[in-house]
Amino acid sequence: MNKTDFELKNLKSFEGRDGLCFSVTVYIKGKKAFVATNDGHGGCNFYEPCDLVDGKALLNDAHEFAKSLPPYKFEGWDGEVAYDLDILLDDLLAEKQEQDFFKKKCKKSTLFKLPDAKKGEYLIINRLYTEGIRAHILSKHPNAIIINEELNRELRAGN
Image 1 (cartoon, rainbow, N blue to C red):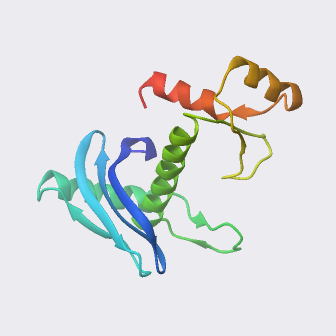
Image 2: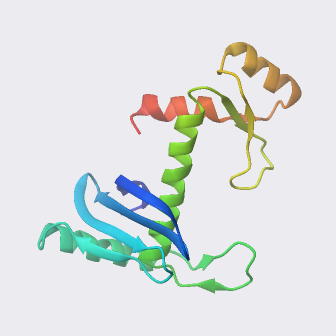
């Protein structure tokens, strides 16, 4: 099992008092596994298997997979903690939210990032992506990574 085996669907979320409040259905290798929720008041996530046989087994597999990952290092913090399903789900949720944001923004804008940019840092040109915009970006930043192109590649690959 690896992170690409996980797919999040039916995400509903908003920023709660002490963190993200959400509900999401988690699929593992295409099988509906469990629903994860958090009430946004701090604390751990809640997990409900989608059925008592396959869902429960997939939820247990997800817990074991998360425990097998190397220790997690939080940004701006010297320590590390054992990886668990809460941390894995937080990572997957952040990736999904970023991808959803990119899909929405790329419909009307051009997004790109520079190779030395930190995670979550990107630049926006409020113009629809065209070859002219691409040429303009690359003339000023030859090593730029154009998010619109990355997103199009992923969509063509079936992700």
